[in-house]
Length: 196
Image (tube, rainbow, N blue to C red):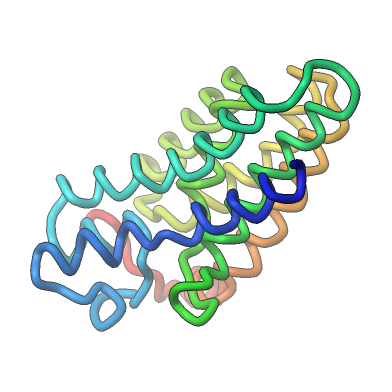
């Protein structure tokens, strides 16, 4: 059962909502802007409404597998660990989707969904940190990188859960890896600001 939940979580995470919504609007988001299928690029290319919808859908990819796992798995034992693993599998699906030859997004919205479910107060605080960074400096990438850097500590402080904190750390590392091009542009002062 548990392994089937992990596989299902990965397949749900692999659904490229940004690409699908872009296609509905007549745009292949991989061919413009940053080439990413995430909410930021969708918003830039086809408008903020579809960008927000992409954000919601990508966040739900992280939440739904854990909801299902929590419903199906018996309480106690390793339930919390398996739920966290389902969230991690959905996250990996977004980063490396089966349906797009393993070339996916950067995972920030899916990570948000995961921690809104696993550690909601930590996620809300981290969202405020993200918003503050973007508001002050204008870079979504910098906000994302700062937020994921803070998340493991916030999760540990507010939940005391080792499995949730380790998941936050692993997700943070992968998000930093996926943002490597952004990091280079930030260091060279070449990153595109959200302010235009």
